[in-house]
Length: 76
Image (cartoon, rainbow, N blue to C red; front, side, top):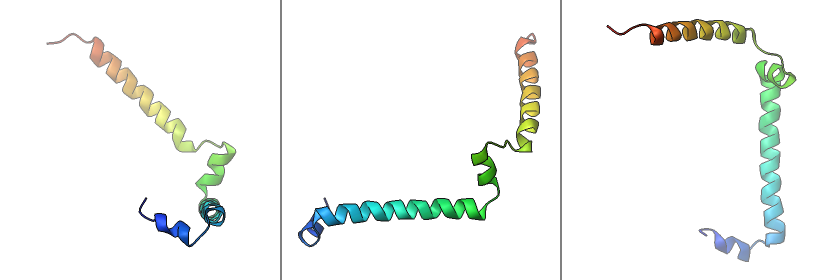
């Protein structure tokens, strides 16, 4: 371990919870920032599907039809 000597200065019973607490606070802060500064995260978490999804399904079905016809067509 590169920073193994840190435990000679800071007790593991203090340092480990402090480190894990800092990670938890940082993660919470990032998630709060995402929810408050974007519009799509709230919709995603509530289960509202975006309108672009329906269009993508139509486009993918057209692509699937073209692929199926290309695969069944005789080779020249």
